[in-house]
Length: 269
Image (cartoon, rainbow, N blue to C red; front, side):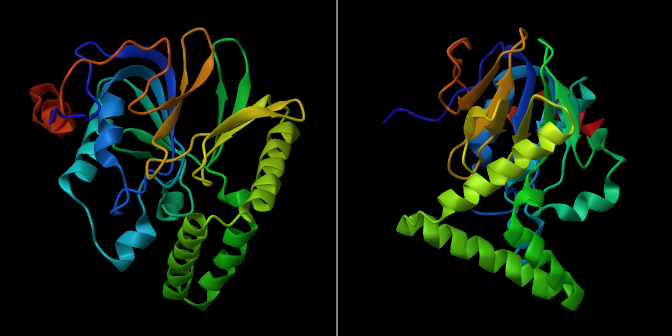
């Protein structure tokens, strides 16, 4: 059988900005190989890591860190070293990084939110989105009773959410509507044109009350990312499918990336 995995282009397509969220490195569900192949397929000026890139809570419960997860981190560091600006906005699963907001980790800027301006002048609030989730806000109150109680509540919440998804429960529609409404209101309050977030693990891009709501999806099930072209146009990418304007990649595997001398040299730097 031929190898059907996504390929890596010999000459990466050029984009202005890339937004990814909810990678959940450190979990077995993470599609790290697909993410690495997508990252290598594009040359971008700026990358936004929109929260839950590393799943700190899951790692506390059980350590899982295969080579592909390490390769994603090394590749991002290599891209930063090569000149790509990377902003990391912690979410609820990687909130251990909140204490580093305002600092540079390996050259990567850690911020609690960002305002992104597209080439055509549109301005977006960029946040993970957990601040719009009432369940997460209630769970954080448990931290007063001990970090392990809070950690257990986070893992239990995720387990229930996965079970509901598998059973096809539709209650989430009302929760999503409240989430989206609050996210858009936060952008409107700042006088912006829209909001870019993650957290829900459900990719979306549409107008809400005159503003643009964009959710980048995840790298657990949807394998989606938001890209900005050099003319300012925003487009949702699903990997291995690519935006219509992006050339079809050539053949290579993610394992080949970490063996490339240029990547190893950059990571070492």
